[in-house]
View (tube, rainbow, N blue to C red):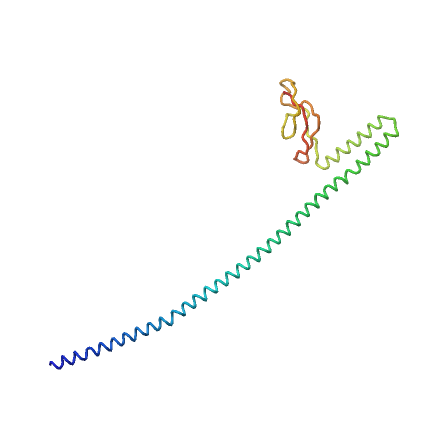
Length: 198
């Protein structure tokens, strides 16, 4: 019986040794697997990051090209617009001056007529016709006289050059106009110079 116990005692360490060897083998296999898979994961992550960086660099290049193209288009648009404005101003001025030439012709004819005639009434009528034609020309170009007769004084339309004591009913009203004012559309291009009652 003692021999059996000794035999078990001797055999047990051999079994333990076998188990320990199996465990070590398993551990070694796991370490080998981990060692094999770790670099593959790191490589795939690196490739993914490089692909994303390349994609972002391509997008940045595309956006820079788009920005440069839009800046060039805007610069061309600005130049074209400035040129059109300049042409429009020149053309608008040309049209107005062209429309004024018949008035100059009328004044020259009136001047020649005044030198050859002693009939003051005929000269007066001729100048009245030219004046009416000129007022018509201004109206056709949306230039209008600012009304001042018995109007309330308005700083948006009138410029007071002096005041005059005219009684309570004329207080704050325009009494006299020394120089007519004009509007072009809604814009005042010359204020009326007026005397205001106080």
